[in-house]
Amino acid sequence: MQERTSGGSERASDEPLSGLVLLIDFGSTYTKLVAVDLDKGRIVGQSQSLTTAETDITLGLMKGLRKLEEAGMPAPAFRHRLACSSAQGGLRMIAIGLVPELTVEAARRAALGAGARILRSYAHKLSPAELKEIVGQEPDMILLTGGIDGGDHHVIIHNARLLASSSLSAPIVVAGNKDAIPLVKETLGGRKEAHFTANVLPHLGQLNVKPARACIRQLFMEKIAGAKGMRNAERFVQRVLMPTPMAVLRAAQLLAEGTKRERGLGELMVIDVGGATTDVHSVARGEPFQKTVVMRGLPEPYAKRTVEGDLGLRVSAISLLAAVGEERLSEFIGLRNLNLPAIVQRLATHAGTVPTTAQDAAIDLGMTKAAVRLSVERHVGTLREHFLPEGFCYIQQGKDLTRLPTLIGSGGPFRHLQERRQALAEALYRPENPFLLRPRNPRMYVDRHYILWAMGLLAELSPTLALKLMKDNLEEVSQ
Image 1 (cartoon, rainbow, N blue to C red):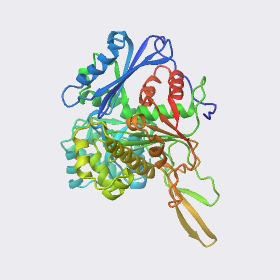
Image 2: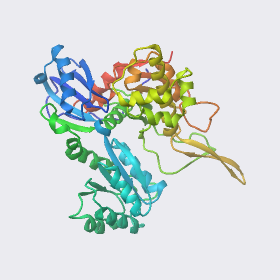
Image 3: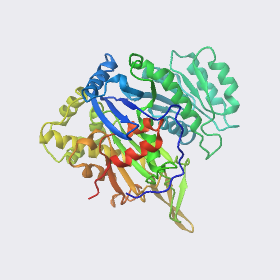
Image 4: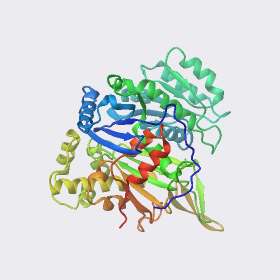
C-alpha cells in the first residue's frame, strides 16, 4: 500500500485516551454501531439494526446495543459515545446565491462539505413562485449567499426580504457580500433565526467555505439532530457530532493526509454507496498537468464531496431507475425480462431487503455498478476543445483525477457483494469518453468492514488510531 509523509496534525484529547468507545451512525436504512477499545487499539465489536426514525430512533439503537451486550460490552461500559446521523434524509438544505457558476456554486460546496444534502439551488432574485417552492420543500436549513465583497448587494437583500416574509422556520445561515450584512441583519432580525458568517466567495476566484461549513455543523449539532428524533437517544449518546457524510469526508481526508505519527496514503477517492444516496469524496488537487489544458471555473476544493440523492439502492431505488433507464440498468444487471419498476418499488418500500437468491444478488450488483458509474461521472472534471488562432487547447472544468493513485469503495454493497472489483471498476476512465477525467489506473480497495464513517468520529479522540484502523481495514481488490 503506497503511503506518503503527512503534514497532518494530531489533536489532543480532553480526556485520557483509554476505555471503550461506542461509535454510532443513525443511517437512512440501518443504525450501525462500532466499538473500539482505546487501550488495545482495535475494533472489538460491530452490530447493526434497521433505523427506526419514523417511530422512536432508540428502538433500532437498543437492538444494536443488545447485540454488543451479548458480546460482553454492556452500554455502561462505554466511556465515550459519539454519533453521526443521516436519518430522515440527513441534513436537508437549500442554497441561494447570485450567479449559478459563482456564489451559488460556492454555497453548494460549503453545504456539501458540511455533510448536507442539497434539495435545490436558486440563483438571482427569488420569485414568489420559487419562495413557495422552497417553503414546500421544508428544508432543515437555508444557506443564503450572494455577491462578492464590494459587489452586488441588491439580490441578497431582496432574497432576505422574501425569506423574512415567508412561513419558513428553518434557520438561515448568511454568508454573502459583507457590505450587505447590516441590512440583511435588520431585515431578518426578530423574524427569522439567522446566523452570520464570512462570505463564501469574498473575491472572484477565491473560495472561503470553511466558516460556513463550521456554522452549518454547529447548527446541525445544536438543533437539527434533535429535531430529527435524536433527543430520545441522548441518554445513550454524548454528542451527535456531524452528519454522516461529513464523517466520511473527514475520514477520507485523514486517510489521505495522515498525522504526525502515521503516514497517510496520499490523494484518493472514496465512493460511498448507500440506500438513499451515493456520495463521492475526493481528496486531491485535480489540477491540469498538460500544457495544452487551461483551468476554468471556481477553484476546486482539495477535499470535495458530491452527493447523488437519486442514486441509492433502497430508499432512492425508484429514482435510480429513472436516472439510468430500464434498458441500461438491465445491461448493468446482466439479466433480461425483469420487471424493474416493480423490483425497485419493492426495494424502496422495504429498505431492509437483503439478497436471498442469485437474481437478487445480480440486481444489487447491477444497481451498485450503475450508482458508481453515474456518481463518478458527475463528480470528476471534464475537458472540452477550444480553438484559438494559434491552435487549440482544452478547457478543464472540475478536477482531473486521471492520475489518482487510490480508489476506495465503501458502504453496504462493498461489504457484502462478491464481485466488488467489478462494481468499483465502473469508476475508471473509459477511452470511449476521454473528456471525462476519471481515474485511469488506481489501486483499488474496499472498506472491508464498513468503518470509514466510524473512523471520522473516532478522529475526534485519536486521529492516529483512527488512521491505523482504516489502513488495516482496507482490502485490495485490484487483482
